[in-house]
Image (cartoon, rainbow, N blue to C red):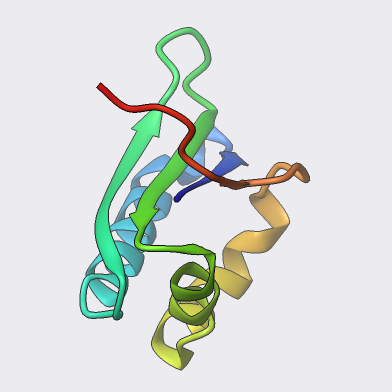
Length: 94
């Protein structure tokens, strides 16, 4: 499954935000079921960011983001998160 969380980040906070997301990816890397993670920013609107992670399943994802070392970094960023569903099952891959 993939998880996509989008964030609306003021340009003045971009550097700090990118560092925090990098630290979150580092913390997630050791979680069981974690496959990969990426940080992206739209080319048309530099204030819109995405944290994209891939997992062995939804249970692994939920447990991974619940790890204390992840939660302590995610919670402060939640005010910047776009309120929308973010967990996707993979239907097809090529």
